Length: 428
Image (tube, rainbow, N blue to C red; front, side, top):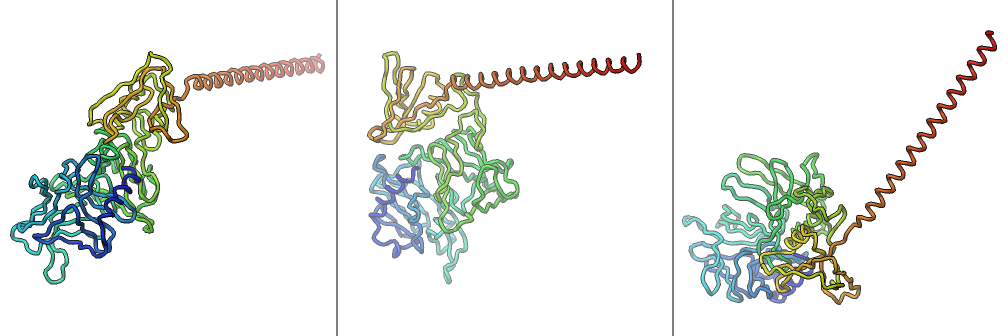
């Protein structure tokens, strides 16, 4: 999700917080967390609360970091909780669950009956755990469940990407569906233990890879991290910590396929992969449509499409399961498509396409129009001109070479004639 959107949501969340430094970090059996309360880690670095999504008229249990202001984890991204009736509770049976006025919505974990001193705690690492603690010193004796095992769109230091061979559980990131909808989206970030590389997939198709991890680095990722790779009979996984600890590191996978660190730089740009190009870690998965040229890209610009004749039209697809990357994929494959955008503003789903050759995109430099994606074409005429230039250079070079050869042959023949005449003079 875009950082500006996360900031807005965080400010809404912060308005409910009177002083997180004094807030509790632990739920004990019988405790509840409702829509107006929250847990915060011991030093206030992370907080847990129900966050409201006005566009969806629902709320979700989420973990936030306070610096930077960003949402890191959602408990039930594909299951909405009716606002404002959401409650997180650790009941007397040591079951951690989310409820609303309709009853139990999601059971996160139930501790074994014979255990004692079971609590749910938000740690300073941002990990929310259900644990058994020592009755004397409060130290952890067992962990039954942890949020780090169920990442959403954000990877934090200490989180894993990979697979647990003991139970088959897979650790991976999945983007939001759209910028405003936290439901599971089209892009995933996964660890490939066989290839020892990270992969970004869109609906199962590999768009980008980091390259194999060799010599303590990935080919396509800058050396800003200490990477740990574990491979044994129990698990295969990747994890990392940032070399520079002065700013918290969080990897965010967006709904367009961009992977970036909140430290301020890109890690991967799968949104720039079109299926035929291999630059920057992009992978080939499809032939380039005959109507597209190398260098053609979709650009997001502020402006509008103006119809220059009646032979063109716009098409709408009202399928709310479609995200902006689906619109891009469809438009790229359609030779008549010149641009696209989402159809429904409320959650940025569905697709609107501008098709036909009689659309003109008018860029609005004042910023008064909406943003749309339009096809920025690399002119095939320019491509032909470059090709003609090289052909001309080749012909000129061949002519020059032929001229040089003719001169050399002439000089050799002349030298032979001169030597022959000299020998006749000396030996009549």
